[in-house]
Each structure stands twice: as structure tokens, then as C-alpha cells.
Amino acid sequence: MRVLRGLGVSAAVLATGLMASACGPDETGSTTVASTAPTVRAGAITAAGSPGVAGTPAAGASAKCRTADLAADYRPGTKTTANTQVEVVVQFKNTGSDSCYLYGWPGVDLVGTVNGQAHTWSLGRGDRDKPSQVVIAPKSAAQFAIEYGADDGTLGNQVMKIDKVVITPPDETHQTSLPWNFQNVTLQDGATHPSTFVNAVVTGGN
Image (cartoon, rainbow, N blue to C red):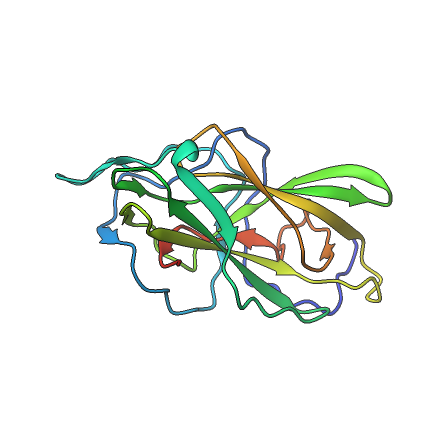
């Protein structure tokens, strides 16, 4: 059994899986309007992979957001430190002419190399942020956080060098991607307690 040293693991995770579309929880939750950034809280992983269907909108809610109408980008101010738990915040800006909503977790695949060989890691889902219907007005944004275990290669763990992150918005099958400009990550895609996972979409963004 391989021991991972130097990384704080947030909590438990169920088995991971690679699937094409992004996910959402059961049809529960409230509707909120994207505005200010959420309070950062410690969280845990309760599910894995990127399958599922987003929740049904509450009465009067707008249509679901589509990838074609969302511009993904990193929020500024991400702090990175070697060999620790790091949070990267990604925002979805509504570039369409109408309001739309997101509900649940995006699908997130880390794409890169391990020992020089191509590798893709579909992240599990954290439960730090309770899913709710986040309505995004035109030119406004919502956001989600990727938490990962940074690794500079001195810990003796297997390390993944990430080139890009592929993102599928909740209840979508079309993807978008961003370059990964942060540290390498401890590879834990087969672990029961990975320190790298994605949280649900919440209000916030610029």
C-alpha cells in the first residue's frame, strides 16, 4: 500500500469514473443569483467522476446555461504554495443575451503526463458547497473551486504534470478547456482519499 506524505486530505471519496457529461445532484436545492464570492470553507468528497443530470429549475427560473454561452477563466488571486492543499477558482461568465442557470458540479478532467506518459484524471466531487440553482445574468458570472494537492516531486509520491483542465458545465456534454498554470499534483486517481477534487458551482465571479 503506497503512503502519501506531506498532503492534508480533505475527507472521504467514493470510487472515481470517467464519463462524458457533467453532473448535478438530486432535484433539490434553492435558486440564487450570481453576485458575491462565497465564504471559503473546508469540505469533503462525497461522490466521484462526472456523470449525472442537473436539477429541475424552480418556477420562474431561466433556461439552463450552455457551454457555447459560457466563458471559463480563472479568478485572479489564487495563492500557490509547494506541497500543500491549494484552491483554484474557475468562473463561468454568461456571454449570452439571456439569463441562464447552473446547478451542481461541473465535470473536470486534468490532462497531462505521468512519468512522460499521457494521462487524464476525472476528478471526484467535494461537498464543501451545497448545490443550488445559480442564475447568471448576461455579463455576470458564477464560479466553482478545484482543490488539489500540490507536489514539487520531493515527497516521494507519484506526480502528475498537468497541461490543461477540461471542463464540462453541469448538465452539458460540450466541453471547454483552460491551460493549467499551477503546480504539479500528487497523482491519486486510484486512491480512496484523494486530496484533489472539484466543488459545486456557487455564486460569485467577476
